[in-house]
Length: 433
Image 1 (spheres, one colour):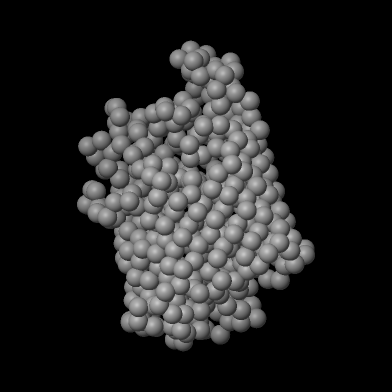
Image 2 (cartoon, rainbow, N blue to C red):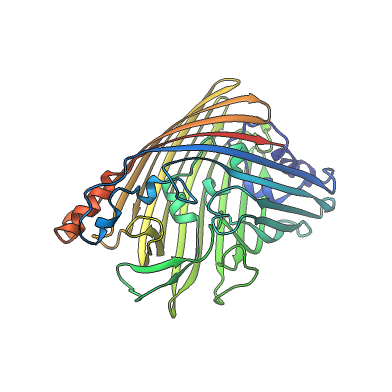
């Protein structure tokens, strides 16, 4: 296998203009070109303004009445949830990568100082710290803290490959994990109350991964298998003795022998993650799995993915206001999907459209909710390493089975909260170096 050619993608990820939508991200993020040097600093900043077009809720009854006149949590800008509009550095990441032994051992390190789920409880977080060993043909080994080999939307390098400001509902809800602890009775059916004890995972974990990719003419086949802690990313050790096992398979047809994060291809993939989480005095399954496809050629790109969760499903604060207990289903299910596409109609301009749907707590009729979002986006690539992204999201929330909720205040409040969800507009500047 020609390591020099295949690992060139890693150095390109930090230096090419912002035009990428397709890549083998296992390769791009895990490997270095042998001639790329020992020390290469890189980073990116994403100042972001978000406005949610919603009114403070009115008309809540019963125990929820004291929240009248406030914005619900989904109508506030995260991670602080202070208001329905905010200007902040969504991401501010600085890193270094390079070779310790060219072609044999490389490293990747990255820290986050922006305002997002990862830093919701600490101002500065290490998001990546890994070594990759390229000694065994067909079985590269990566160890440390890095992205799990799961969904495409979770794996992509957001600063060069995501044309949207926010992730789809399914990816946000199922793949960004914050650890929780029980704060009351543990209900193995329905929902339990919990408190959040960590920031978001950023799709990462500490562990060891075996992976590689194989070229056969225009075809590329890749695999990854990872054993990880299943703990918060700020903790070095496993907290419950149960390891997560995550695997991913991908097949790609590469057009025009293109390479790196800017390559043109058609790909399909599938992945699965299985582990357990301690809640109260017992452990419960946390399973995530999905399948997807993408296409990128010329000015066009499109992708679609379906994913589902089984076991522990975290729904957010209930009632949905800051400081309230977090609702957790321990033997629940959820599923969702997105389909999106874009057209680079000018060298400096691109338009994008995404539709996503997410069904949460599908095992309990009274708790099930359906989220749908249509996102219209525009990207202006006004400098080779800088772009401006404008998104508008039409957001909708539906109570799936209102008649399963007791009549009166409880049912009225559930429908009122769903109807109150507002659309979201966001403007983000991306600058990388």
